[in-house]
Image: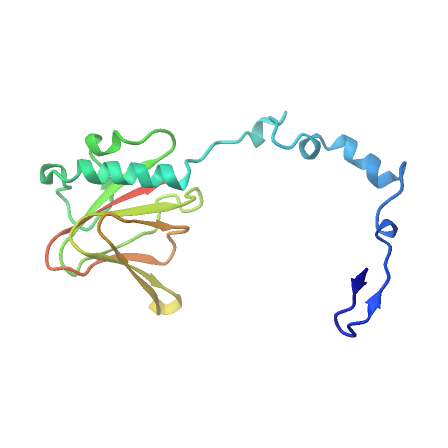
Length: 181
């Protein structure tokens, strides 16, 4: 028995009235849609092939491994304020479709977190190697929406990089690893 919320009095509605009867055209129309019936199976359409993206756990593990490799200051990027491909020693911890980049920021320096391929990127993971940094989210007209500190030995997962900036708020050079799926 269902209830009408506006009057709180019981309303009788038979659930079978909403379902089509056997032999109805609606039930027969599902026969031609193999992708719905065979959910989870490979599709016969090559343009619909799936590409497995890494999980958030794999992204975080890759970021942690890259940060451990970048603990050696000799591997830090020479150019400051630009995202660059991480050294091979830092990328060694990744497998699959992941891109590992690193940035070194001078004090009070900032860099945008917009991706090179924003439509392809599913998520980003930031991991602080050294220094102190914050992820700043800005809205229309540069209005400040949120400030999130990157804590040591903690990964920051971003669902989208749009409108984010990374700011060095410390007194020494900040180095941050970014793993993108």
